[in-house]
Image (spheres, one colour):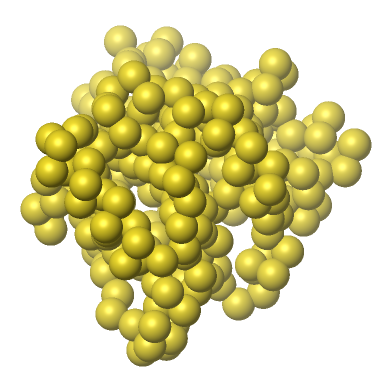
Amino acid sequence: MFETESIFTLRSQLREWRLAQQRLAFVPTMGNLHAGHLRLVEAARGKADKVVVSIFVNPLQFGVGEDFANYPRTLDDDRQSLKAMGVDLLFVPTEVELYPVGQESTTRVQVPDLGDILCGATRPGHFEGVATVVAKLFNLVQPDIALFGKKDYQQLMVIRRMVSELNFPIKIVAMDTVREQDGLAMSSRNRYLTAEQRNQAPLLNQVLRHIADKLRSGSRDFMSLQTAAIEQLNSAGFRADYVEIRRCRDLQLPRPEDRELVVLAAAQLGSARLIDNVEIQAE
């Protein structure tokens, strides 16, 4: 596996592969890799000649008081996992390499509407940071396809919109959320949970699946379903940020006749901020 933190070296290697007309797949990550990340890498391996993975804990998407300093960094373990998966190139840029003029002065990418709701409403600037770093990475790697998990559904939608509107010639491939046996969505932040909190955490997915069952059965009292879910989470020790029923295609508020829906939630449990979602094809 070739590894570099240099943009110049990255581009030199990628140029060779493009000249050989080899198809490139890209999986951008913040490291601390788990089975969900590795599922993306495995899928990428089957869709391209060469697989590129990036590891970069992006400061631009962390707000004041968030966990940037404590975000788990496990590069040695990640490197070994990616080697075992047959990754061709690992890009591990420094902050100075990606933001040479500094965070405050860097050019930024915004995705209005999608980036300002749900997680974007309570984490101002988060999706601006995500869109900016992903746009930079797409420009550097110029892959044919890029793979993302559905766990962060809003992030996926933001990236799809950005790719469409900025005319990136990249196919975005979405992969289903990888879960623990009890239903908890795999996340690097799960390691923040105490043993007791880890036992409580699957309730988040259970609450969403309950709403999904109600919607499939014909319920359209969206507000009552959301309110009850928030109350259930809060009474169980979570601090619910939101539980929302939205349209799949654009994350806007649904109408009673809408059938393709997604239930999304974010909640704090101890020091871990957990997110999850369930897609629904209603009757």
